[in-house]
Length: 131
Image (cartoon, rainbow, N blue to C red; front, side, top):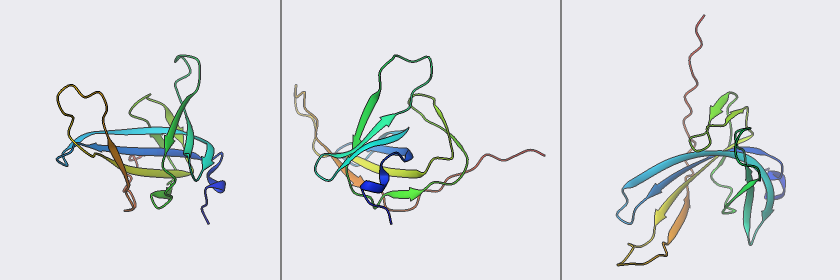
């Protein structure tokens, strides 16, 4: 059974879909990393993978603790959309829809976002193999 504690050290692909306040899709991103921390109050910390020649230093990404959007990943090679990293046989696919919860007014600097777990199992197309 998947728990916050059992996510530690697991490799995951994180699919994020962003929507504006009107519900229109803004962008999609695919990240990859290893779970480095898991805390019911603070969230799940993921150390993102980067290309070998990228800037030194680890990038941390924090996601909510809802595990309903964590799915066992199929075997295969996956490429991230952000860093262009290739990941082979990750443990989990994690999918979130992120909605802008209100319009940005005038010169506001702050944006508000609501994270909603995508609980429908993602469809993953595997590349065809030529024989």
